[in-house]
Image (cartoon, rainbow, N blue to C red; front, side, top):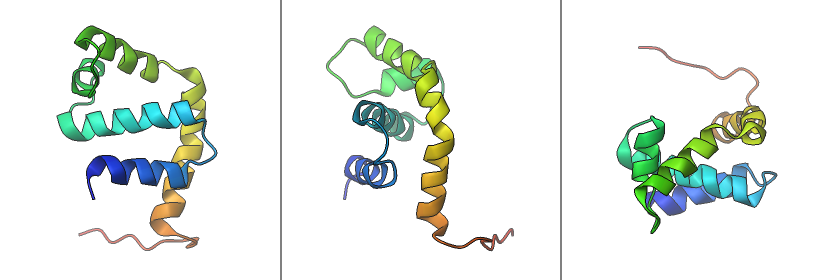
Length: 97
């Protein structure tokens, strides 16, 4: 399965409570990060796969980073991903080598 399908499926399953538009933008940002391996706003914007001009993709990444509503949802996103990764375990075992 391709990265795009996998990331979209994981976000759809773990963040079903999230507004669809926010989930879509988050999915696009995750894909851009994976493909470009850059976490700057311009790096994300340049890596967004879109027919829009680069300038507009950079603005899109900037609006994502500055979105206060989405920022408030990050704790819930982290909680959802934690439940996906560790399951029902209250105290997961973490091995450090």
